[in-house]
Image (cartoon, rainbow over all chains, first blue to last red; front, side, top):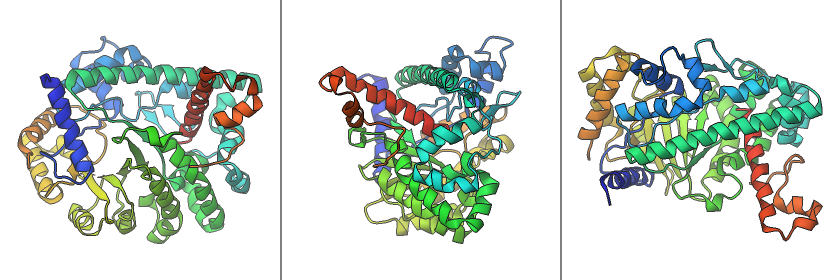
Length: 400
Length: 46
């Protein structure tokens, strides 16, 4: 076996061990910069043609290999760093999206929108997918608000553009993994039902009114979404997926609602989704956005191999909670908690000291994967220089 | 995992409407395209 394959095997074992509750040889290192940051860094390094802006490059997949390769060549990670949770501008442009729009500086943004009215809950609950396709899509994707024939053409264009660009990214990631010895990381995406209902359907502000005005309908809508969310995460044939397959779920609304609301509205349907996602032995990666500490006793009830990426909160409390109260037979892994702002405001030694301080809490006896509290949104200096030093220090000094 | 929606067909449901291709192995590929559109439709609301 050559050196790259040995490295790939070693890295794969790090992740398999930590995800199955075994203390790995060293702390596995992950990085997940936003695609916007990776593009910006490529422009700074001069690997893209002079004059091309972030906005240009986001639209031109022919430059994406160089952009992604440039990050992987400069910063150490045990898993491939790709385009992040990319929002394809061509897809949203074709559809005339109101919900996802590119700013003038080339950042994909999500304005607050809604498309489901309160009096429509019953029809939505009866068949959420059909109601989304038939009624709601034209309201947030304006290019679909047209004749049936033209609508079919727009959907065909969108599907083709999406497939072409995703295939391009897939090809790039295969090349990157081969070049740097990264292990395969098969996975899918899903969403908490309450978050799905809130994001584009009812919006942040309106879902808060609905919890008071029509609580039973909110609960019924969340329940109606459960099988769709499981299906989105595992596809049609979960029994054929790789044992290493993990479903990623960014979590949204928990930090904005009370304990009482969380227990009543957010958690029950999400528990059903989580039980469904792990039913075939696959893992789940949760991105716990903002501060969910007041909900963590309930969140700790999830069973299976669950990785929680924390943005804010108390790492001492979480380590104790996971060490002492994780459900029998389950593995709860911590990641995050390392504030990305350290890279901007501390010097190289300060960044390393912060990692030492955190690892002494969360990495004791395993159960920890390094990543930042959130995706890096800029690599402008001193971030890049600090990131390089920190990632190489972790690679060389974090063996158990 | 099971859900009922009138805008999504499994292969088993589809072939009942088109029995003339039920023995054609390659025709099952239609399911992959149905699934690809399903995935995109779901993703467009998150």
